[in-house]
Structures are given as C-alpha cells and as structure tokens.
Length: 123
Image (cartoon, rainbow, N blue to C red; front, side, top):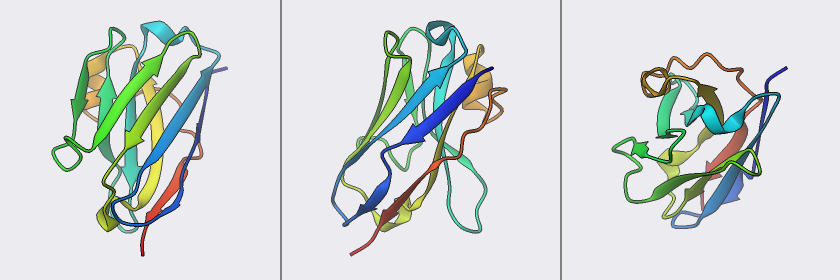
C-alpha cells in the first residue's frame, strides 16, 4: 500500500525558512516523479514544485528562486526547502507521485494524497 507522509510545516515569520519532508512507503520510489502541491483557504490546490525520477525540476512562477525541491531515493523522501517565505505562501502543503511526470505537472497525479502539513507565514 502506497503511503506518503508530509512533515515539517509550522508557523514562521515573513522572510523565514522551512524545510518540508515527504516520506514514501509501499512504492519503488526511485522510478516515480514527485510533486509538492499546496491549497490555501478558499483556493484550489496548485502545483508548487516537481521533480522527475532523474532529478530534473520545475517550479511555479510564484516560488521560483525561493523554493527548492530535491529527493533522496535511498531514504525514499522528497524535500521542499522554502526560503524567503511570504504570507501568501500560507497553505496546507501536500506531496504526491506518478510514474509520468506530465501528470504531476498537470496537477493530476494518481498517487495517494497524504494528510498534508500546514505552513503559516505570519508576523
């Protein structure tokens, strides 16, 4: 059974940093593309960043240059390093997976959604 567990969220002041983790189990992690998504109150879930099985990355324009996605296949974990956080980054952050990168980018991954981790950016 595939399981994705997000962690690392919290309350941070504007300009601060957080690192999110997503631990996978029940899957051959190394062959999957992975994505980080977020959903703010009253808004649709959106793609934040994605990484291919080979390590190539894509970012939403709103986080380009501030966020970095990475993966550790040995630990079956994908990370999201978030720097220079802004109040508009406040959301629940989720990770998900798919064998096909196009589906991750298109916000249609077929993996299981975890419980997410809350990120709140506020002074």
